[in-house]
Image 1 (cartoon, rainbow, N blue to C red):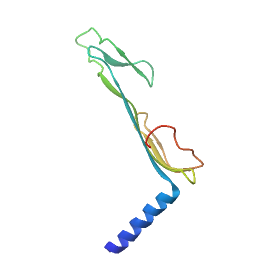
Image 2: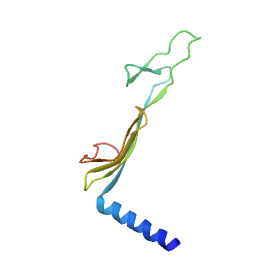
Image 3: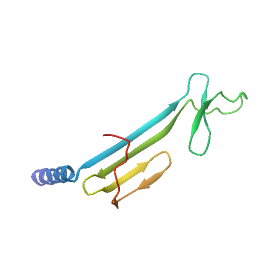
Image 4: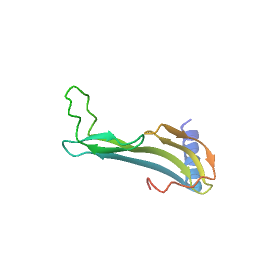
Length: 106
């Protein structure tokens, strides 16, 4: 059983290397200075502004996530295995003839 698992794992690693497997990680935050809060400027963007003066109002946080994405691409056959954007809630799965994103690691 252990030998079969080892062979299967070696085949998966070899296929990933040959296909040019590229993981993509992208994360960024907006950190506002002390005395400011990150308030929405539009549907998908924030900007640092002074807090709302009404003490009974729940204040916006000082730190918000602006980009949080993870994905796996096969570079040689130009295949996207998956790409998940946690901020906008978009999940993209298997697709062909998709170029690598220009951001993320590596």
